[in-house]
Length: 88
Ligand code: FES
Image (cartoon, rainbow, N blue to C red; front, side, top):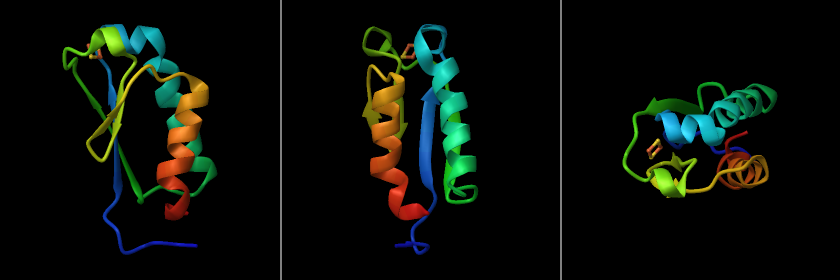
């Protein structure tokens, strides 16, 4: 099923030193691979941002403003599947 009527989904990855070193360096690579593999270029906007003071809960990412914490590769895959599946 395709939903091309929506605005691009915004994925924001914390690039602050804590989140970056604790997983978001890997997570941003996995997100880029997911976008490429699933043909989502143009349907997803990938952004980085500075520390937002939530380091103890990191690594953090947000999807259309909804913040997710403690992102490991399994949780990231779940989030991407859940939020981007209909964008393919
Ligand atoms: S480094 Fe990500 S919230 Fe502080």
